[in-house]
Length: 433
Ligand code: S3P
Image 1 (cartoon, helix red, strand yellow):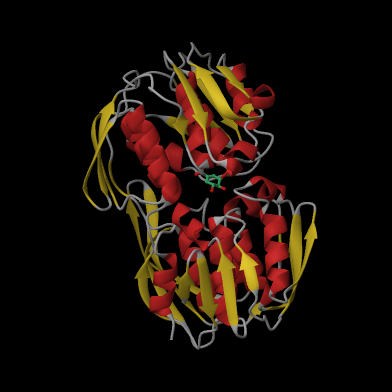
Image 2: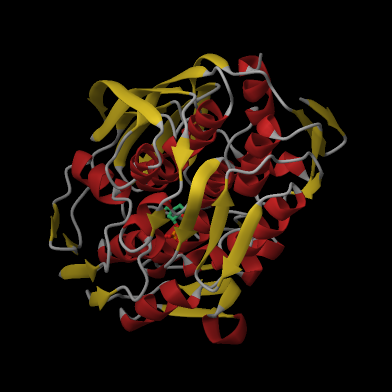
């Protein structure tokens, strides 16, 4: 694996072997900074993910008057200011590429006593915001944005909020979390109903901070007010980052890879279920709990894969892993069909279009549908020049495909991996034989 400029060259490998940690979980790192900031006291967060997205959240919270110290590389000390201690920012808050930052912060800022403006990069300014602006307005929030709040920049004039009961039309942990954060600033009970379970890191973290969050039959309820205790947290490894090594270990010949300390929250382990159903040999060992989250070591070895159908309630559990599942499907015998995944079209890029376009360049038999894709395998992939679409997960999925493609695969604009996994390419190089 070599880089020149912002282009990565990947060559076919003979196999992968080794043991590695993966960087801290992105979703949990964002939440640790946001919730630590409004807690009462000093929060300590270890194994914080220092990636572009999480640094965006940290920058925004500092601009809102929160003191955050980094005593060493991945540890943070966050001086929580309490629910009502944030300060009006002096400038526009720029979230760069981070959807989690802009959506969760919208919920947090809606109930403050000041004005703030949120914007981000080209991708963020194309992503749908009405899904969070709409229900926040129902709570009384004063939020303005381009095309009547459909797109960022968003201007939020903090105001008194009313508790609400809202049914999410689309399963989204970001929207759910934004509403729960806004719910903290009401005097009453806010209930969010989700059509399928989504990642529940916000609920778990709030409970660790002493807040009661009820959850039953897809209804999540929180009462406003009170105080949040500070966090003392070790962020688990990100299963969405581990996914690239799980698939690499399965599809490369003669491979054996162990990934230590990975978060195995059941709302996130769809990737293990899907790859196991495809015939992948993955074992989950040494299960333990850290900061209200289950953690384990994952072992994977080369396996013969078969195609499967993926749809319905499984989709939110694998939403970020679908591009790399498409790569696994190119090496699986038979057809893999992904349905009900329209949400992929509104991620950092249209991930259905990007996966189909780029894997086709490598010779994959992959077809696009409105709400997913289908892949016929197994196929001998051939190295080609591919584009990341400036999307970290597309870049990393293409790198995995490059490991089994004949010849050389070039990925342009590959630096975007820094959004969730700085040093991804070095980590992959160290495993290659
Ligand atoms: C996230 C939720 C998901 C996921 C994103 C992170 C979160 O987005 O795709 O990478 O941390 O809450 P949606 O809420 O849009 O499904």
